[in-house]
Length: 307
Image 1 (cartoon, rainbow, N blue to C red):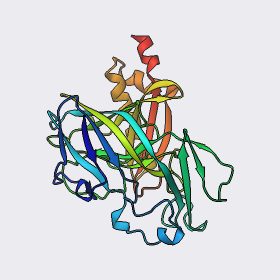
Image 2 (tube, rainbow, N blue to C red):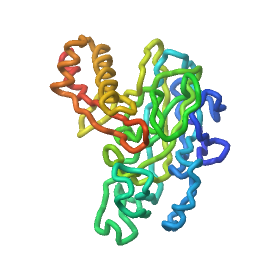
Image 3 (cartoon, rainbow, N blue to C red):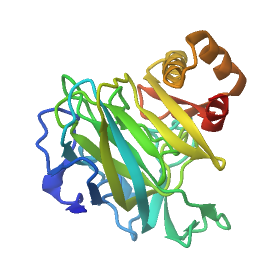
């Protein structure tokens, strides 16, 4: 097990680029435990107020811990990220801010501090008094270095990034396309709780301690991230589409699912029909403009029963 303090300045980057220097090198099957800061990279404390929120440096948001170089990962492979543990910090925050969310400028700015313990988050203030949210901590940002160019942290991309997919919790496996030698994996933006779409701009933002294990699937190439997740006590295949057009993102997610089903011996026409009959679509991310994330899920037992 390799231990990394991903909160250190030298271990955080603010762009997706293959020029980012690895902070660690892992062998196949080796696990890493990382401390991951919140989305504002420790610019707020549990005693912060709305005035502190207004002082946030917009260039220091969603800083990612990494990258991690994975032995044996080559262009055209797929990186499997086994999410073994995601443990949230003892407190978190949510906010309403006029730059983010589906209903910009309708509601006043707000910062709410939450206590997180025993599987629940409870607000400290009168705002949302009486609400007790179950926590399901996940990493909002996971991705690999792009094949070319540099990208900001905020909008999700074909290589992952700010996907804010609430189904990528402990026990899930995320699959990312390998676009550079070593893959160059990074993670950020832990959430203790979030609804599909993150429609108001944030989840309950927090820090986290995560344990991840990596495996390289040789010779298997994917275009967009995929996952194996637990949904409503069922193991499900999950595919994602990302685009600045919601319809196009949905098409990409469905195309990915048909391709994934093909690996289980299901033909394209069969997969297209099965998706319509048994798959669900979720708007996983709406606010990290200009791109949206659409997920499609299907219970894996439907496929296993066939075989």
